[in-house]
Length: 137
Image 1 (cartoon, rainbow, N blue to C red):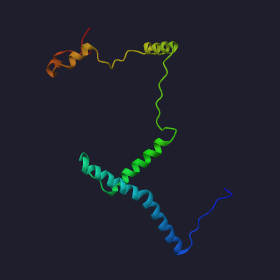
Image 2 (image 1 turned 90 degrees about the vertical axis):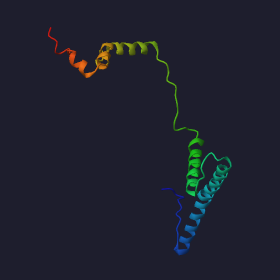
Image 3 (image 1 turned 60 degrees about the vertical axis):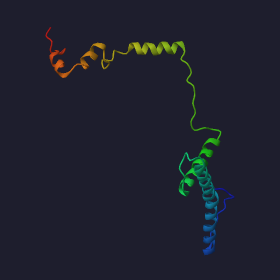
Image 4 (image 1 turned 120 degrees about the vertical axis):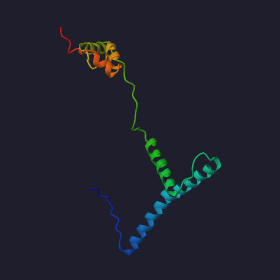
């Protein structure tokens, strides 16, 4: 435990009223007033420019929240998302990858040009073509 840990005690009805008053002042000062100002600025430019719709108070609160969270995320020195360039492969690594590719068998799921011609024919034409399995050698 911390030695200098202080506990805030709320005593009685006056303490509860004071806590509610301070909470409402903090919310109105840091949430409602900036949201109201943003709403009015947005609506002013909305009527002057006419390119975007006007917003209400709830949307002003959301706009204020987007601005605050953007400032919090982008003001930190460390970014959440970073892009690193992949280093080029050395010659040994390229040879290793090529040998692995060559060692793999042929994938029979790949369509060959002769198979594409069969796929473009109609059902009647396909019935006339004997399948590889039905051929007698």
